[in-house]
Image (cartoon, rainbow, N blue to C red):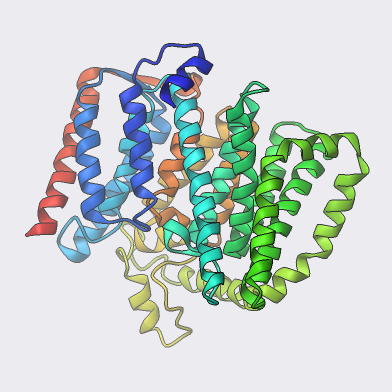
Length: 451
């Protein structure tokens, strides 16, 4: 695969081993959900040792410094409550600035190949998720898929980013390559798997991301309708599979729909040609899709109750903002306060709005660090699919907690564009100091896990 990638890139790879290890890091993170301290610490040590072999690097300090400061505040906040550095978010999330720094060493074509590898892996995750659903349907207990991520909403978030990542890869790829057909195949498979999660938040964030992608790319309304119609068709296939697997006892129907999905996905390029040739078809498909929204209400009858609960959760969080405005009340403390408040108890560890949650548990400084990163990213230039992915995950985190799943942010970092206009050079000594400090932190965390 790597040799094939070199052939299509036409450029010699400068740091292929770093690229492969970063991909393997993402690969491993997709198996550990919200994060396993031992695994993340071990990976952090390996990545720091690899970083010590590198030289100077160009980075955007308005992203790196706030990311480091956010985690530093998180570490101090956790230490203040628990007296150690492993209980809290920083024990796993300090991997974010490390990955950002290492990704910055990659050349443009290496970043593209890394994005391609991550996209293909997410496509495989989607395919395995569909397989999981089919097996459950065979045994008569099919339900929303969680996949490797272990949670339908986390699975939905990764698939959502993966769809935009594949779109970004397709924009840059020449016609006629078998790899392009494989990417089109996985584009549809990802959407089918996403529909099987029944993650309403991911559906909505995907739609807003597509709108953002269209506006940022200055595309026509007809382009937007074409994108929306392909999404609707794939969602329709997924929902049909879900209904057949969950509401009927006819496994043969599940198999027939699965075969159709595979054929539909393999000939995905033909659909694009058809939508371009018949301009009325996207309008018709979008109209049917809007009318079909009622199916989601039937399949997820508690969707409105869930939305209402999350809004109440956010409102509840506001009352704790000024208890400890500098360092917050501490990681995992909001649930305890909520339990003893005498009001509505939400039975979850996180407020389903990342900015409110961070402000409550880690304080206003950490909140502003995240806000700076968001604003800085919007100042960058990138392709429209990358911008759509960022908008989608931002919207998703306004009503969910995908920020705390360890694979989500590294995936977003690995598929993002490096804009040299905003970068500053960090010399070899500075980078080695950073890698040594992170190496000490991850080593300390790993030792504490076994003491």
